Length: 210
Image (cartoon, rainbow, N blue to C red; front, side, top):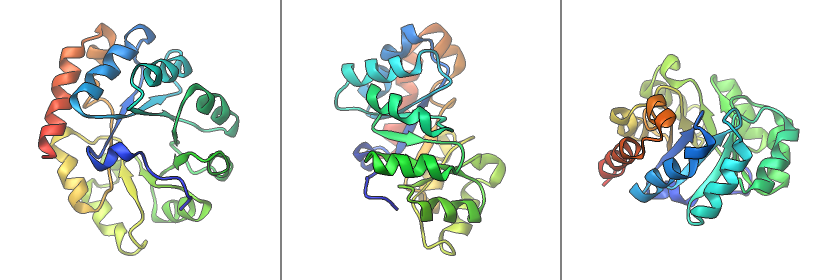
């Protein structure tokens, strides 16, 4: 593992809120809905509209939140995102160059892996934690439980199909946090800028952790 730490906000609410496909004009308001509820770690994916502008705007509006960049697949995508304010990097794959560059720039890096071999490779290359993806298809909490001990209990963040009712199951299975996308940010709510729905869902998450 590298010297960078996971976002501190995960110790309070172990959820990375994955903001994917949000119209730029609603991004700050939608982010504010989850931050206000107590979910303070937000990943903006690069395939979102004006993703770097979203990262910069959210970080400027909510300086106590921790905003990262997601869907990073190439090393050249890192520097612009970090310059925009991203404090952690998430990838759907294990790319040694991406991991190495993130480590050199002092930001936490969370590559995506599916198999025990990929997870071990990510750790050896310096990953801060490993995004286990897509967890619903891989077997859910039982998969996290099964691979933890043989791999020496790495920091795992299951993502892809996690829903509000399964968060505690993943944490009990050994995950350090979960990645939550559509279950927290329904596509209809994003399209319409429906902050009330997003805030309600975020509050349910926070209340369930108490």
